[in-house]
Amino acid sequence: MDVNKNVRWGWLKFMYVYTIVGSGGFGLGILVIPDVMRSIFGWPHSDQIIAFGVTGSVYLSFALLSVLGLRSPLKFIPLLLLQLTCKVVWFTGVILPLLLTGKFPTYALLFTAIYVSYIIGDLIAIPFPYVFAKQPSVEMVRQGGECDMS
Image (cartoon, rainbow, N blue to C red; front, side, top):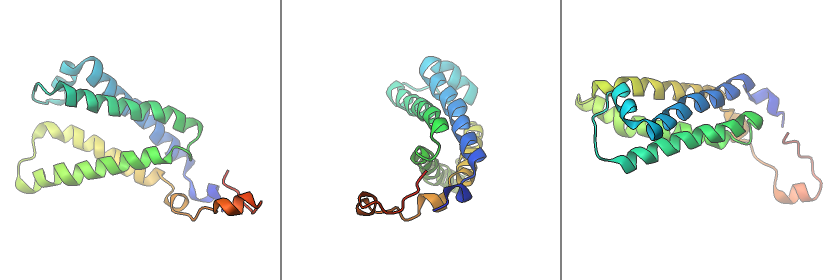
């Protein structure tokens, strides 16, 4: 299987850098300066510090793991798949119903635009033919069969 043919290396690395900067900055901001982040994004203040902290931790974790993705882009594609899935589920489960019912809050506009940029970037960057290609069986690899997964 010729991996290089199906991989947009520039986009793949860009999405890791974008995740490091965007998710890392956002997650760190939520954890270190939560009140400032609430005021920047216009979120109403609530006492849900645990949920806010979990959110920040997840975003920061995406960023930290994306650093490893820069070193081994294909090995860390599951990170981008998780990011894509999470954002698509959030968009369809939270934003779409709000839009359809006319209850979309204006403070969510910036956040939604950022999520859409991640969705589009991940769809372009992830080499889906590589992800869904049939992998050689363990038995074939043990028997010395042809296996070029580099």
